[in-house]
Each structure stands twice: as C-alpha cells, then as structure tokens.
Image (cartoon, rainbow, N blue to C red; front, side, top):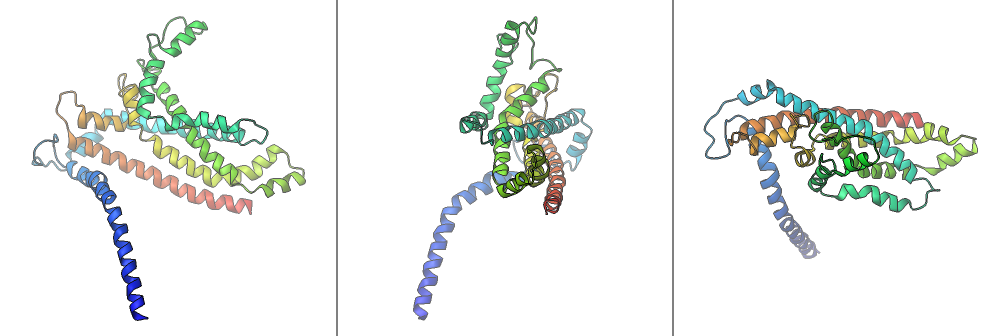
Length: 312
C-alpha cells in the first residue's frame, strides 16, 4: 500500500515537473520583456541616460520635476483624458443602444450585423491609422471627395492638418475602431438577464419602456460599470492610432502621453534620446492611470451592490 502511494506521488511529481517545464519558456519571456523593463524604467527615471553606455549620470528626481513643469506634458496629459472621457461618454451608451437593437428577436440577420460591426476590432490599429490618413486626407481624401460631390463643402478640408478638427477626427476613429468590442460586452450582459422577470412584468401589464427602466437598467449596472472601467483604461493608451494618424500633431493638438514618451525615448528631434526622462513621464502617467482604475473599481463595487439591493 505504501509503495503504491509512493509511486503515485512520484507520478504526480513527474507530471508537475513537465507542467513547469512547458511553462518555463513563457515565464522567461514574460520576465525578460515585461517585468524586467518595468523594473528598469523606475531605475532609468533617476538618471540622465540616452540608452547607450553605462548608467552614470544620477540626477535623482530632476526628471520628474522637469516633467511636472513641462507644458507639453500637461497638454498630452489633458488630451489623453479628454480622449478617454469622449470614449466613455459617447461610445459606451451608443454601444448599448446598438446591442439592444441587435438583441431584438424581430431583427433578421443580426449575426451578420454583429460581424460587420466587430470587424474593425480585429483589424490592426496601425493599419487603420494609415488608412484613415488617406480617407481624411486634404488632397483626394475620400471624405472630402464625398462632401464636395454632395455640395456640403466648397473646398477640401485638411481634417488631420488643422488644430480645430484633428482631435475630433482621431476621437471618432477611436470610437469606431473599438465600438464592436463594447457592443459584444453589452450583448453578453443582455443575454445573461433572467427572462422570467420580463415575463412576469409583461403579465403585470408593464410596457417595454417600463421593463427597460425597472429591470434592464438596474440589472445592467454592474456590467455597465465594468465596461466603463475597461473602456477608460484602454482609451488611455492609444499610441498606435495617434502615431500613425497624426504623430501627435498638428501643433501637438492630438499629442497623447504615450506619444510624448515615445518622442523623447526613440524619436527625439535633436537626435539624442532621453530614456530616463521618458521613463519618468511613463511612471507619472502610470500612477494617474492606476488612480483612475482604483476609483472606478471602487465605483464598480459600490454600484454592483446597490443594483442588487434595488432589484431585491
């Protein structure tokens, strides 16, 4: 009996060894390309370093002080959060309305429409940015050609070259690009709602509007707050879209913190990279994103409990 137990233990240990062995490559890659860069970014932030040679010029918190007094950083910071606010306020409610429409039993071809709306999500963001540059281009751009042919405008507009329109265009493209994902989230929430509540409400004579107000909305509050949280956090990182569409221009009108960090780390105008400065900017922005996530996480917890009480 004892021998059987020992053999079972040995067999279990052997299986565990193979599991760890298969996990090891992924773990090493994660440590090398995620954990190590994160740790070193904190180290670099205390140095004036161009990415070449040893870390010798220790300057303490001077990078952080310089960033906090840099108007370009605060401009990028403001743009990032305005973009995030636009995504949450505009995209999330519209995605809910679309999900309600596509969840309707009377709608034919709903699966096709869902696929059509979801396609931009799986399209590479950098490719989308490059294509949008041509679509909104001042010369022979599709948008200008359509508007001119319809007589809506008299002359071509430089949508991405004007400080009045560039940010709006980037925001609209960002909303369109990730709209399908938010719609799927809402659909998942709608399809998880208990149908017996709607049947009971219908028996009691409740209208569609009353059922939506007193059943759908309270039950969707928990998943809705999670969708808002995910949308906000994801919208605060739009480097690939902005970099390919405008590069942060014109006149830094669409500059985001991600683009700001990239510019100092890899695309410095004077040709000298400032890895330490860029790392400090990334850390400050990371702290801001963490605080936003923390506040919204607490809001999710609070609203989730409150919605359950209201239904009960």
